[in-house]
Amino acid sequence: MADDNLSLRLEKMRGKRKKNGREKNLGERRYEEESPNLEQQAEKEVRQVTQVTNPGTWNMYIDGSSNFRGSGLGVVLKSAEGDMMVQSICCELKATNNEAEHEALIAGMNLTKDLGASKLQVFCDSLLVASQMNGEFAAKDSKMILYLDLAKSIVAKFATFSIKQIPRDQNTQAGALATLGSALKKSKFSSIPLVHLLAPAINKEAHTPKPVNPNPARSEPENSNTPKPI
Image 1 (cartoon, rainbow, N blue to C red):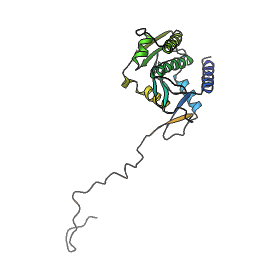
Image 2: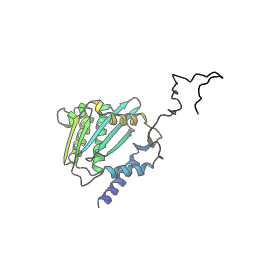
Image 3: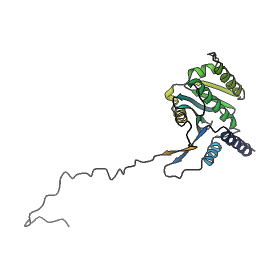
Image 4: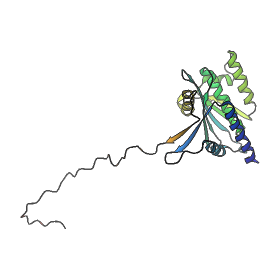
C-alpha cells in the first residue's frame, strides 16, 4: 500500500511539473557513469528519502534569489534518516527577494507533504520570513500578507512544524540552487546533470618531475682494475 501511495504521489508531482513548467530539475551522476534518465533518477531519489511510516522529523533548507537575471528557488530536503532530495526552481515570474523566499518556503512545504512527511523543521537565512512565520514580525505589504496566509494554511497540515533563521554560510546548498534557478530564467534546458569530477584533467604522473640522483655514477678509466658490477 505504501508503494501504491508513493506511485500516486510521483504521478501527481510529474503532472504538476508538466502543467506549470517552471521547475528545473537537478539530475546527478558520477563522472565515470552514464547520465541517468532524469525521471528515473527523481523517482529513485524519492523512494530513497520517503518513509511514510517514519515518525521522525524532516529538515528542510530553503532560499530564494532575485536579481537582474530573474528569480530562483532552492530547496534541500533531508529525511529523518538523513537521505536528501534537492530542487532548483526557475521562476517564470517577477518577484522581490522576500517574495522569492516565501515562494521557496511554500514550494518546499508542498514537496514535503507530497512525500508523506508529517513533521517538518525549516531552516532559512531570511530573518523576515522566519520572524513572520513565528509571529514576531507583522506582514504589512498586501502581497506579503497573502504569502503569509497561504504558508500558514499549509503549516496547519503538519503534525509539528518549526522554522528557524540561520546564518547564510550555513545555508549554502539551498543558496546555490536558488542562484542556479535565477540564472537559467527562460532557458531551454529542461535538466542539468551534476557531474562529479573525481580526478584532475591532467595526468599527474606525466607532470611529476623525476627525482635526480644526487650521486651519479662516475665513469671508470678503461684500464681500471675496479671490478664492474654484474
